[in-house]
Image 1 (tube, helix red, strand yellow):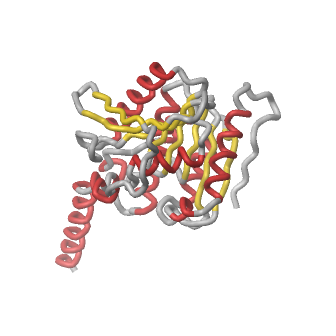
Image 2 (image 1 turned 30 degrees about the vertical axis):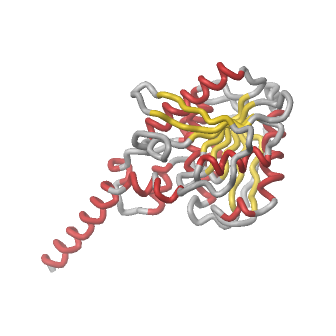
Length: 279
């Protein structure tokens, strides 16, 4: 019996150690992003910013025809090329200037990805573009992992609203749900606590989730919605975590989300709070 127990403990220790050592590869699978699939519009501006620690991050700005309705800062999922995300957003939100950057460590951006680095870079992108473009409005749109970056930025900068697609309350909670026997709190280097970043922020937030999401279960998205101070839209879209982007429903949902945010710009009165129900 003792050898069996010792053997089980050894296997458990190896499994926990592997999760700790390889968590960066699991959270930031840089190789999965691949090369862009879609061609950027001819008028796309390629942007290069230098971080405080002398890393180079590369992104794209696609301007709307005419004056536009504001600036959308996009934050991709962890396996989505930033160029394709910029095209995706610009096609669906043609009235807005759209900017999306490759995360640290995702070529052609330099450095190594990490929660603190992605958060610092998001601040740099926001501050640089807001100063340079002086947009009428600034919205952040985050997809999957990018929802964690967008939630952080909405918590520390005066953005006009946030659209979070298949978001989580935290990667910490997501990991605890997926690995219930692992001491996640002590091992995780990148907790991405969107719930803490947004809980006290008076910013309109729209949330879009996938009905059949196996990557970010809906209970994790709903846990985030419950702490929001100003939720303006919660919509369940047909499809899977990645499959929703191939369906026309996402196009209409993104536009509805920004419309709901802009309608909520005035301070809420008692009775104006949106009531959300989860099926």
